Length: 142
Image (tube, rainbow, N blue to C red; front, side, top):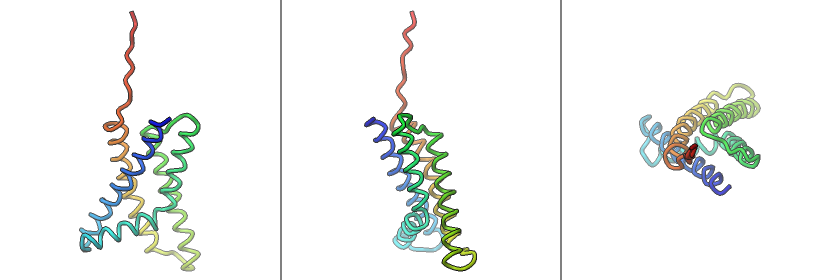
């Protein structure tokens, strides 16, 4: 079980860190200074992808509690579900707050969700394939 918890923690930490790097680089390329880009990246990720991150973490935790820890593929599916849930939430909240389509909010959510999904793919490859290699069983058939 501790290996599963370690995998979940690594998945989350590496994904969030890579998301911040991707968003910071994107904001820097869009004309912000590096410091401002990091601030904008943190804002986008934690204000416009917060629901998605929470849904993703809850789904991974539920899978772990059910004694079937999420593998690489399921972790990515959960990430996509989280990003979609987040986008729907931003559309609804933006519509309620603005009284119409809140294009800027939707743009922020798409930007953060895209960076999150790219980061999740890279993080899953790193964590599941390189850092915590699957244990190989030795077949001892005579």
